[in-house]
Amino acid sequence: MNQIPDPLYQQIVPGLKKACPRLTELDLREAQQRIDLLTAKIQNRHWVSKIVARRTVLGLLKQAGTVIAS
Image (cartoon, rainbow, N blue to C red; front, side):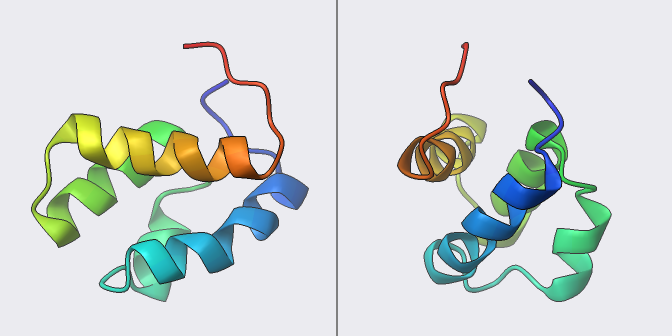
């Protein structure tokens, strides 16, 4: 699952904004609800490793109750 469905994406956006305050609205739009692009945006804005950025996204998805296949 690389594309985050719209209802699920709307659920995680508040958590994203809290966990990653440097993300802009434009960043969120440009990520196109894709895990890989969202990970890259977090990595770029917060100067963290790709692993940390991906764990952030996957952690928020897990909190939203999504089953994620690594």
